[in-house]
Image (cartoon, rainbow over all chains, first blue to last red; front, side, top):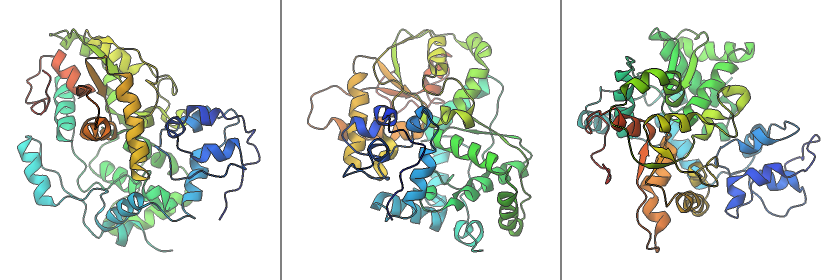
Length: 128
Length: 260
């Protein structure tokens, strides 16, 4: 579903000028905000630095807009896999309790308990 | 990143602050789960509920993204609909709905203890330090309410406490680009390269976020592949402070650092 250009946006391009993605040649949501006819951009190209959001002179909720649009689009593999891992084990980068215990003991850190595997799917993401 | 935790604990311990781990804490949900569902907030609320159940009113995080997500979750709990939903999900787990929890980041705790920190500096450092700010600790300003969101000075002050000088460079307030890796590895490494190129003349690049560490240290070889540049030393802010405080290297997790 196409992203609707926000009515309040004045297309000033400040968001483009502060975006780290744009500085390395990528095109993020800010490309679309500055020019709704731009042929290429992706709402997934973002490093969550919030600089566009902070700089917008008319206070568009750029971060919120981007997240809403992401939920309507297929994710890139990196996001898909990390999301699946969080649903399955509560962690974006899974580790076993034994591995964690060994690592923390090596570094002389107190033990830490991992989340129960069923926690996210069965408790925190209840269907209505 | 155990060296981050161990060095943060060592520095805070010297200030009389002890940390307790939240048992069974889950990933905060941002920005990964947030990209799929607005329900991401219940992950962070769960973490706040576990902290509250331990009797704590403050959560300190080492990661910028977690600080940001937990702060937004704490704010979200002022909405009745979110509170009702959160209660429905927490109740079967035996967790009461948390009241207001103060969410803060290591950098913020350290900045609030600058005068005490100054008295602990016993080994002033003669170094030029380039720093990179943990983006989400400062932005969005309306949520984080800390420092100048686009031009923060706190880490400058903390670095200068150690006796080191701050190496100025263009792009200090730019994001390192680590989170971009989830969507596009090539662009993420290109963003990291900008940071490393701009700070190459500094002795050490100091950061205070696990994501920055991942890109600028662990992926540094991939970033600089094919070039003959020398490796850039990186340290967590807590490791730098700990060195100036004369804390033992094993407590600062410095065993894998090349530089001493």
